[in-house]
Image (cartoon, protein in one colour):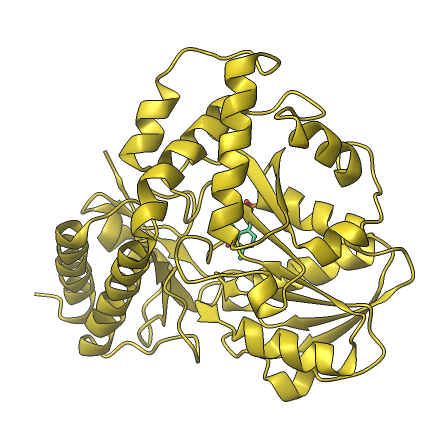
Length: 352
Ligand SMILES: *Cc1c(COP(=O)(O)O)cnc(C)c1O
């Protein structure tokens, strides 16, 4: 078995594995409806919303597109700070949905400040909470508040793909109206589900568009424990099983994730590596490659020890490497990974 140190997909939670070993349920039967409703209510608690969570079959990007299509009408103006590959994707999705997009371009690794988004004249603000491509975490509540100070009618949409179950999140309490995530990151399940959380304000102003992505139709079906089309019900079972295990001890879980990621940064610092982000997300640790060392060499040093890591994306391709313990790792396994990290980089920095 390989050690997945990638920021998604991640090492699966044992409860997910167990759930996935069960016989197939038919989605239009009572046990499936019960499971679907249970998963939705657990997700509602995880996103901290009084609104609704829709479970879609697809990856996180599908959920991003569903959110943008159903929250905004063509021609509406949205502000999209771009500070990594996923915020870049949010801007591209908004453009392809026919919105008038103002990009706020920042160097990768930086984060937008509240002053930068306090600009009037917008229907929406789209933000990536944990920018997995750089390892940065933005101050979502402060940004939402600054934006709404200038746009009281505006809606804030957030990508919480690598913050849900990794870092604290909340919708209404933070002024976030819509948020998305996926099954293969903090939820420690296989890829295949896109999640869309809608706060009451977003539900009121829903402007359904698309066919498969028509969220008004989904909402009608999902309130009854079904979905409009065949759902990946096995994955829904895995997500419910993980949430049932983790939510009652969420604080401890988030503290563990934070400690594990800080451990990776501590080792990196000891090795003389420079961190990429200005503010660190607990989902992933991103480091610039040591002078003159190609990414391939670092990847290979980890691979020799049975571990899979991630490189850079976009302008950071070939310049950084990334390690993540977002998956199902306990404290002792994390210490083992830290030792492996030291050893792998030691081979490169101090060849014998
Ligand atoms: C992984 C990820 C996504 C979704 O990617 P998919 O490959 O479509 O699941 C979106 N945003 C962030 C921040 C991510 O880390």
